Image (cartoon, rainbow, N blue to C red; front, side):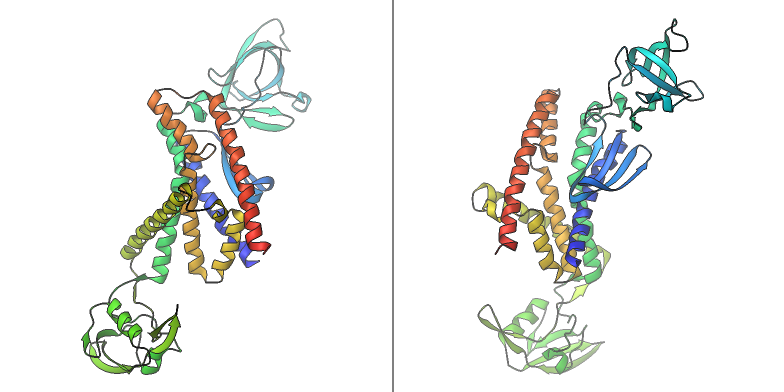
Length: 420
């Protein structure tokens, strides 16, 4: 159960911040966001605030932000339609009722002659209470269409994704993967603040209760000046001498609170990967400071970004088999293994997964954010967008192929982790 909770929390957080990036910059650009969803499938939780419905869905394997202009919009109101209109105090249309008009006794029934609820925002037609005179009704940009009791806000062109500038659309799509890198960076900073950042100072870190250092009287914070007469200038020097001398007495000259002391320590012999080494039960020294934590955050983010790109290169060159890829099942199994090592390892795993999600989404593959950014780049070069139907077909084919790959990877994961 703890693994299930950890998996849901980690995956949910990665998806949430990714989609929040899209959502935040879409709202900044003035795009109408109809839905913010975590997961797919049936709704588990739903809440509407302002223009947006916030949903948590059953399958925690992704998420989306549904923006006006991206999906088929509201029903087109054609000439001859009989619709009901509700007005505000300034006699502007607030609701356009398509059916079940009897439930709205205060609405005014109009036979439509002409309508434009995207650009000029008007309804022109013959009212039922004055059928000989055609009237023009101004529609509020926040008006809603009511069909079968469900309300859908209209989307004037200035609120639709496709009518925004190329820079605004690019930033809205790019912001999703960007937030995954930001999340990883923040997680690595938090780990560094809590754990501390390893330093190369010859200062003893945490002492294990059952090690030779504890038995000899060494304490955390002791500064090692020399070992067997050899001057010590770094933690690496301390580690090297201890590892090379299993079961041999070592004369430590240390400084503790300003006082020099001599302590004899005998490293315990341990076999590691076929090699006999000495250990005394001391962790490396760490420094807890905001500056070092931020520096560590950058270093960790850069390191794992580089490692993932190296893996992608191996995949492209054939050095990395498709059977080595993992989907949600594989990630779940890995999360189970990492969770047993402790909370810090689990946090680091979440950071690595976040970077991985960001990079994967930036790949120029149709249906992914990177595929859409590729079309924006082509639009910028040619000075006009590619035909929406052609682009939509490319994304549809890309999505189908991704689903096929997901099925193959998931089956491989099930065989590897659960059908051994």
